[in-house]
Structure formats: C-alpha cells, structure tokens
Image (cartoon, rainbow, N blue to C red):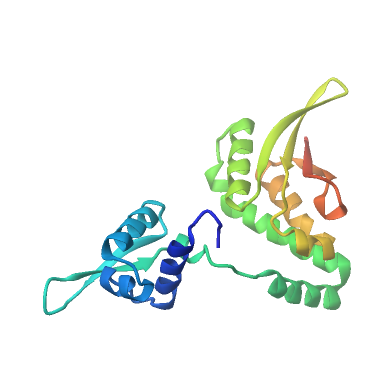
Amino acid sequence: MTKSIGTRRQQLLKLLLQNKSGMGIDALATELGISRTAVQQHIASLERDGYLVCDSFAKTAGRPVRLYILTEEGINLFPKQYSWFSELVLDDIKETQGDAGLEDFMHRLGVRTANSLLPQVEGKSEAEKIDFLINTMQGMGYEAEAVAQTKSKAEKPLINACNCVYHTVAMKYEQVCEFDRALISTLLEKDVEQTHCMAKGEHTCQFALHKK
C-alpha cells in the first residue's frame, strides 16, 4: 500500500477490505479503538481521494447507519503480484512454441489491443494520435512522453518511457517488448524501431517512429 496513506487510514482500509458488505462509523471506531470523530475525519479524506464510498444504509433500531465500502481504486491500493502468473503463461508458450512463437503471440496481443483503440483515433491528426498513445501508455502505468528527435536534418518522433511496467518479466522474456512495438506501430500506423530497452540495462525504453 502506498506510504502516502497514514497507518490509521491503512488499518481502516484493511477493515473494509475484510468486510466487503461494508462497515459503519461506530463499528470502525470500535475496531480501530478511536473516536467516531476521528473515524469521520479519516473517512472524509479517503472518500475525497476516491478510495471508499458510502454504499448503502443498514437498518437498525435507531436511525439508519451509513455503510462504507472500498472502491476499485481503494482495492487496488493493496499489493498484487501478477508476475509469477505471467511467467507461468509465458514459459508455457515459449516451451511449446519457441522464441519465435512467443514473439508472435506478443505481437498479436499488441495488435489486438491497438485495434480495439483505433476507433478512438479515427480522423485524428498524427500529433493527436501520438497524444492519445501517450495517454494510453500512462494509463497502463508508463511514465511516457513524446519528444522530437533530430537526425540527418529530419524530425523523427520518439516515444520515451523512463519505466517499464513489466520490467521483471521482460528481463526474462525479451519477446514481451514486442507487445509495445506492435501496439505503437498499429495505433500510429508507423514502423517502430526500439532504440533503447530497460530490460537490457538501459535507462529508458525508447521507440523511434518511421513512415511505413
């Protein structure tokens, strides 16, 4: 869980993770051993940040009690480990189809992903398509940007990412990078040359764009 969230709020979020049907302020205060006012302050902050919402009201002998639950964003604060499962899948593909088969699989996956996004860039200029790509990559977790690379008096667009969202997996299976190349190439209708790769020990992942 992110360190920017205090210990007490982490404990509150964990309680809601364990109680999917929701918890009220009194129940949270009892479990946490703090006052209702303190719980309300924590809830207000976490609700403002989008980590929890008031989902329903519980009927009691007195007035209805607000029940709070985690949002999807709140659930995603808790650690998830996908790399081990990814490695199982990739290892099986590589074992049964070889390196070329694994690269072809990643290529088809990248193309398929790009094709699902193409309607959103239909009729847009090249610059707008690049902006859309950057926003898409950032949504995937990349710290990505588009820069102009001047070489031989010609401006060549360059996509730069200072992090790799599947770095550990890519270090073991270099064919994984074909997903990015296929995604960028299909979405922008450009030939893509990967000039730098973090999985190979370089500081960034860079992709140069060329006319087809």
